[in-house]
Image (cartoon, rainbow, N blue to C red; front, side):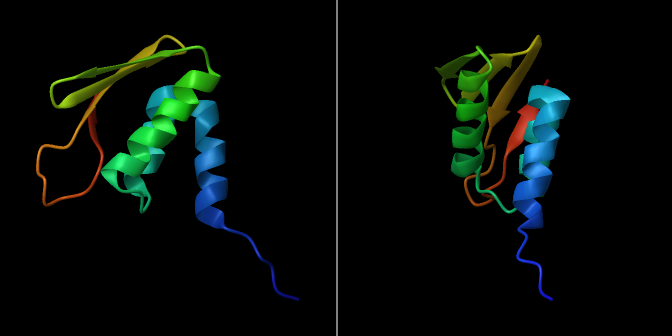
Length: 84
C-alpha cells in the first residue's frame, strides 16, 4: 500500500496554527521562493483579517496580533527573510 501524501503541504497547514510568525518560519524552511512565500503570507493575512503593506524593499504583514517585515536582501538568493 502506497500513501500519496505531500508532507510539505501538510507541514505548512499545521504551521498556520502557530500564527503568522510560525507560518513564515515554515515557508522559509520549505522550498518556496521569496515571491511564492510572500503570496502565501498575503493569503494567510487576508483570511485572518490582517493587513499587508508594501514599502520599498519590504512587505509588512500584520495579523493575529503579530507583525512581520519580509524582504529579500540578496537578489541571487531566492529565499524569504523576515524580522518580527
